Length: 100
Image 1 (cartoon, rainbow, N blue to C red):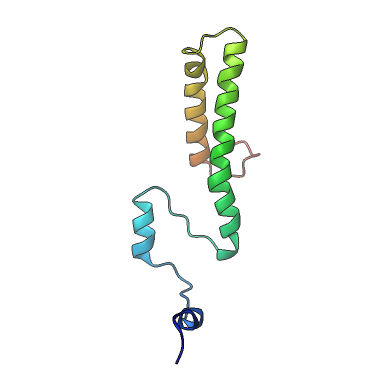
Image 2: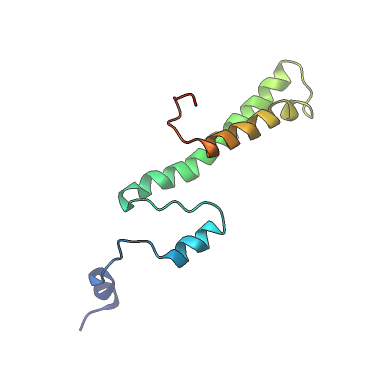
């Protein structure tokens, strides 16, 4: 008789994503289906990328304050630019270094 772990190890894995699972995640945001070998990299990008972005935002605000803006005005000066940059990144259909 197999244990629970053995049954889990021996089960057949689907190669195609379950549409119900993809829809569940798509309802929360984007749901790209990637190869399992990329899961570690995706985890790093999802977690660390957010931290790096927040550090950049903080550094930009501090730079604005250091060049003379008050703490309330500094975030507004780069806020619109940051928002549009994010939209451009999401709409991009070519490699980041290409101009389209």
